[in-house]
Length: 251
Image (cartoon, rainbow, N blue to C red):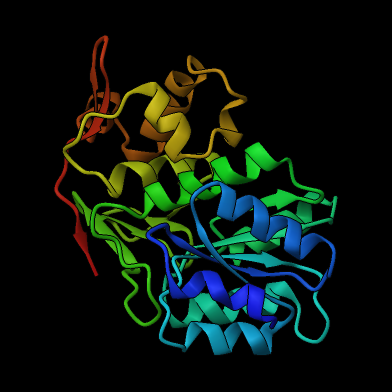
């Protein structure tokens, strides 16, 4: 780790992003982009250096983690981070296979960005993930909240699994999970279509706000055997948006 990598940690008011990237040309570019965008940023080359920063005095708010690292891969490091807490992780990957992206999400990554990243998209995704963590959700190591319980339903955020009141597992697509997570993190709050697109990262909806309606309809179909019962879980406020009409208990 160079002195220039460390200096931004010592001062500044922005959220602290830890960049784990072994490419000596890309890492400085990412750090410069993040600092220009108002973040504090620290860069390291591998998992060993990453761990040194995470256990240090400077709090880290999000890890931008390259998948193809020397030694332990980004997948392995992501699994380690998720096993110890709920620190947000965005994977930076040159892998083109959808299965590789799915593996990252199943290991608990909050999002992924393809290399070379579009600067505006990268900053937008980092800000979206950080916004999802507002409202009291733990972001530091060792303080994770793993399960959200609402109306008898249980959403396991570590396993990305939904369990019905009767104990059965309900299969969710990646988009449905992201959408439900946005609701359970903000219960009893009205969310507009635009907010839901932002909070759920927009990827599952193709950028079209109207498709939010179809996605919520499918989610309601999985939240109850009868439409009126499921609609009571996620309420529609015409002309305004949607709301999770259940209190949420985190464990």
